[in-house]
Image (cartoon, rainbow, N blue to C red; front, side, top):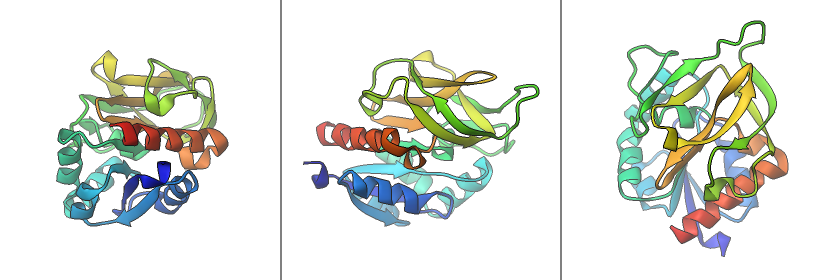
Amino acid sequence: MADSVAVAVIDYDAGNTLSVTRALEKVGARVDLTADPERVLRADAVVLPGVGAFGDCMKKLAERGMDEACRELYAGGRPLLGVCVGLQVLFEGSEESPGAEGLGILPGEVARFDVGALKVPHMGWNQLEAAREHPVLDGLDGEAFYFVHSYYPEPSERSDLLGTAEYGARFCAAAGRENLAAVQFHPEKSSSAGLRLYENFLKWARTS
């Protein structure tokens, strides 16, 4: 049963945590919104949300010991889902915050949109194109999701690319490897497709 999955949502004063929590509860998760790394490490699966600047998010994660908790979660094989800036901080660094180190779980850097006359930040609904099959994106190829961002990751390894979207050019909209998946868009603001993604994450967690 999906409701047997205990999901910790990392609370570090840098995420859209209330909407994420409600969406997870709607699809049957038992959610623990927590700022305690020990509780995060005891969960069946973990969601790392993020809103704001890359460097600020990393600073807040480090202040709470959540940076090391995320690395430990990944190394231990626990399912981890990053959302929005929660995707970006998984990489090594960002043009937004020169000198600030990311979690470094995924090799690559985060770049700012250079899209000519198009407005930045990119805000609105865009279609997801799956780059390869992944349980979290099951049934979601071609679905529209809601984006709000000025930066996007550029994975160094092609195999880490899970999905793309287009805004002036194609960009990485989802990335991951092994027990890690992350998306640039906001599933919790993406209607039925977003709920399907969270439901897929629960199913993946039950079988991991």
